[in-house]
Amino acid sequence: MKKALNVFFILFLFSIASIASAEVIDVNIKGVDDGIKTSRQQDYKEAVMNAKLQAIEQAGASIESITKVVNFQLKYDVVESKSSAILLPGFQIIDIGYVADGTYQVVLIGKLQVGEKTSQAKEISRDGRFIAYDNVTVLDTRTNLMWAAKDNGSNINWANAKNYCENYRGGGYSGWRMPTQDELAGLYDPAVSYKSECGYYIHLTELIRVSCTWTWASDTRGADAANFLFDSGHRYWSDRSGDDSYRVLPVRSSK
Image 1 (cartoon, rainbow, N blue to C red):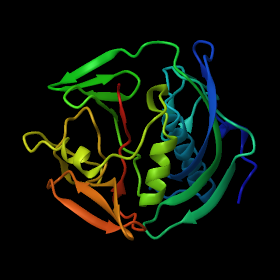
Image 2: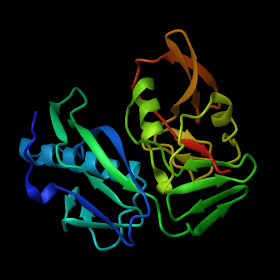
Image 3: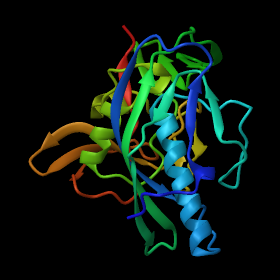
Image 4: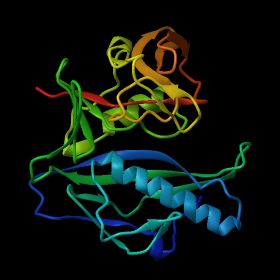
């Protein structure tokens, strides 16, 4: 376990305006390197950076242009965002090291202090019934559900997926949760598609990015939980402990 990190990689997030209200959420995030093996020290730093960038997104903060992240290298130590998020002192980095798929992995455990957004979200794109906003949320006008603009981005089991959704603060909002299988199926559209990061073609509006086809749902029965496949439109039940290729997409009511 590594508690002391090079100060270059410590992220402090500041809001553009003053914080209207703040809360503290727990984060438990797996970070991975870019998959290109260099030195152990460099791959470790890349994995730490990946975990911290995920923490920024989970807090609902968006990285602005004053910070450049190139090949996982943070060029400035101040990140300006539309919502405030501060990784509190005392966080821990668990060094997992290289795993079977060749990536270097760490786990970030700690607390984030987040504040509500002080400005209204602006519409940036439309796709039929879906409206995308600049706070990384997408509104489904048919169901009045607000979706995260992208999933968690890495393998995750059901319990951690549920925790991820409940702690998610996309757009500066609370009240995020894991979707039901019916809600996921309601997003499926065989008339549209894009290629996911894991190679599958996803049949879903391009305003919502799913990085792999298997997506967890909140429905459970015994040791199994529901999931939905965005490549085929099929519904499945799987052991909750499985994480290979599974993702989660947070949702909340917009009312």
